[in-house]
Image (cartoon, rainbow, N blue to C red; front, top):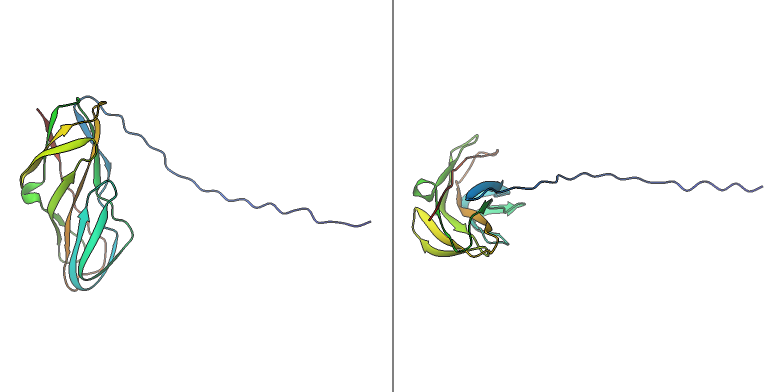
Length: 167
């Protein structure tokens, strides 16, 4: 009588987070945080985050960038054809604090493509027209992160506020 071993079974599990956002009329909510990813510096430089639907981070100077390049993403609801005025943080700047010298995000920019069409841009705000028939839109916020020479390693964070006005 021959004996054959039973086939071994393997299992693997993973989990994922599922979420949704529900928008009320003339509303806005944060969808995701801005994330410049991981940085190794050897003399300082900048990372310019371009907040398009397929974002990119362009590096200058003596830094190496890996990982995320995620602009802040907001979602909102309004009416087709309505004007939306999005106010940027004061001076379009944001300070990040951490274990070392503060870092600054400057030249903050807003991109609402494809659901919003920009009709005016000033240093303090951007105006868009809602061209989504449903009135639901998203917009992304990016900017230029300045990393100092000899920046102390660690996590740096900051917060900013976006104000929306509907006309």
